[in-house]
View 1 (cartoon, helix red, strand yellow):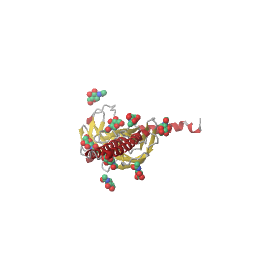
View 2 (tube, helix red, strand yellow):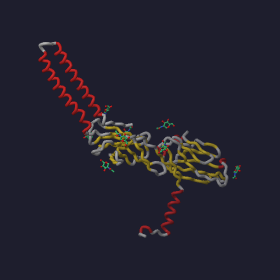
View 3 (cartoon, rainbow, N blue to C red):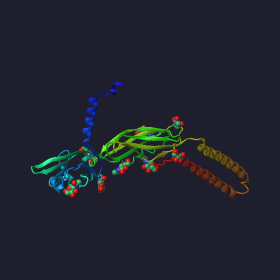
Length: 319
Ligand SMILES: *[C@@H]1O[C@H](CO)[C@@H](O)[C@H](O)[C@H]1NC(C)=O
Ligand SMILES: *[C@@H]1O[C@H](CO)[C@@H](O)[C@H](O)[C@H]1NC(C)=O
Ligand SMILES: *[C@@H]1O[C@H](CO)[C@@H](O)[C@H](O)[C@H]1NC(C)=O
Ligand SMILES: *[C@@H]1O[C@H](CO)[C@@H](O)[C@H](O)[C@H]1NC(C)=O
Ligand SMILES: *[C@@H]1O[C@H](CO)[C@@H](O)[C@H](O)[C@H]1NC(C)=O
Ligand SMILES: *[C@@H]1O[C@H](CO)[C@@H](O)[C@H](O)[C@H]1NC(C)=O
Ligand SMILES: *[C@@H]1O[C@H](CO)[C@@H](O)[C@H](O)[C@H]1NC(C)=O
Ligand SMILES: *[C@@H]1O[C@H](CO)[C@@H](O)[C@H](O)[C@H]1NC(C)=O
């Protein structure tokens, strides 16, 4: 055993005391704009009636959220910012705070006083730390420019409406052979003044590996979630099949060139042959030249058909 592993009985006691004091502090978590729960954890072992108790919740600044005074709601002491935002569950001794905002995070106290002949005496107290969360939206990939390059593309990915701050954002490339590559960009974070929610984005040049014909790109956002969990939110796949100068793609144009040369040569041969006949039939020569022109136009059209076909190989199938 190394020296770092030894722990005397004194150390254990201190550790237990720390754990104990931590346990007195309840933790509550809520989603932004939803209902937060502030429990009082009052067991009422003496079976006291609500008519002889004063129950109230206050925040860190001692502003009152809610008060139940000797069996009746008392709104006189309630701070305006908490008006009509709370409801008291008498069965569980829990206060519900509706439409929780990010600025509502913090420590709250539930305090119960008992009415005795000598006046109100403190009877019970529970402190709760409220944390807030908001799910980031699904990240979205946008291609920055329509520049077609085999070597790589500039991408931007953005997400928003989240809380707390995102931890990491990156591009994930999945190749055909199930190899995965990560590209991290500089994460830009901005905060909404009103809601205090965060928006994030990254921009990065994503290089595409050589000799790979099918790449699927995802954008992944890593964020903190409830119960100390970390979650990864993935964008929709952004597929890209890089253009490859493959011999198959070149073959048709090469064939066309040969056919074209062949047709021209053929046309010239025809002309020479017709010129011999010229003296006999003059009209037919005009027809031949027109026919020649038609054939040329036809081949040109055929060539045009091939051009978009080659461009089709770089499909951007952002679903
Ligand atoms: C909060 O929720 C209410 C409905 O309960 C909705 O009308 C409002 O737009 C939400 N606010 C925000 C900022 O999401
Ligand atoms: C608690 O008091 C109420 C009346 O105030 C009574 O009806 C009830 O039976 C009592 N419960 C216990 C467990 O003593
Ligand atoms: C947030 O996301 C989690 C799953 O990660 C889901 O269970 C929860 O309902 C979402 N909450 C809100 C308010 O969208
Ligand atoms: C890229 O081209 C598409 C359609 O061809 C167009 O809608 C889009 O705005 C262009 N994007 C940029 C960044 O130029
Ligand atoms: C990506 O962006 C950089 C710098 O902004 C630029 O130099 C480069 O040409 C871009 N590449 C593509 C493929 O858009
Ligand atoms: C997958 O393909 C890439 C690019 O061609 C290569 O670098 C990598 O080694 C390959 N991985 C496997 C497991 O074959
Ligand atoms: C947020 O507040 C800052 C400073 O208070 C201000 O400079 C900025 O313009 C505000 N942004 C918005 C979107 O209101
Ligand atoms: C690219 O790969 C994905 C999954 O690996 C597959 O669904 C898709 O059909 C492929 N696309 C092409 C053009 O090969």
